[in-house]
Length: 318
Image (cartoon, rainbow, N blue to C red; front, side, top):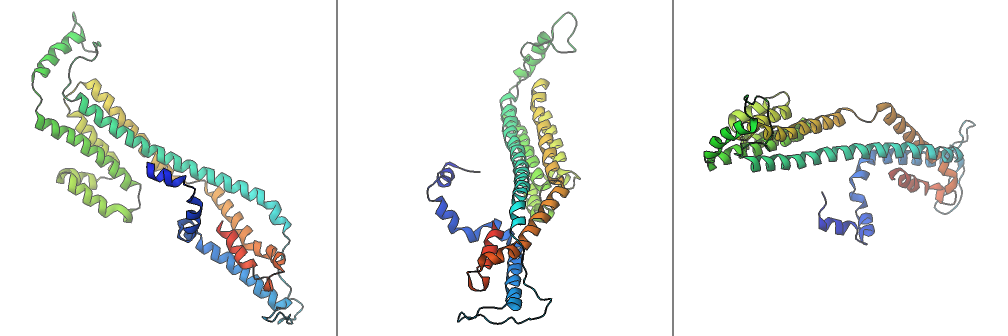
């Protein structure tokens, strides 16, 4: 999440130099290290093989005879035209894959943002409406007694409810339970969507530190922890002294929590269609692994075509 200082740094004129300076520290390039090593190995193999069967230039600039003079030993190479023709198709596949990946990231970010917004909204309404059991905007409710309005009956019942002073200790405890169970849901959702070995110990320690032993035990042992946390949050909301209509409004946020949880579970369990990802990966892998065969003639001015090796590494990285 960016702050004002990070935005200033993000649009700084020095960002280009800083990005180049941290090139070797990039996590992206570390992730593709094995693929780059494989393509560079193919480039080295092409250079060595062609030097063995076609002759090589020594350090004095003298061309040496081939080491292998058999008829079957021919130089490896491919024309560059097929790679040129296939490049637009490969570019489109990569663009579609990038757009799909960004769309999934954007959906996940929006789901988490909805959680943040509605946790604030839920606790704001709970705090504001606590102890307010007065008539709800003079509305008529079902079950009103005959010969009278629901507003008059609710006024009678609410007058007795409002006559009782609010216990500050009880208020702090009940609202604290709503806030705590809201946190428990968000924390359980984070744990639910993370690998087991990555967050389990921290999750259990935090839950035990904040909740009562009974609450913590029930939540930790639950089959679906976020749903259990939502149940505990519903119970905490139900205990608040306020009109049931206002409780229903607060409970609407819990339905949104269920939607965001289901959306995140869908993103986790349903990747980009595998046939599409595999086709793109196979296409890109074949294109990169065969590319040194097509680049070899283009680097004839370098010593034994050796500049093809760093060029292949550069192309594979990007």
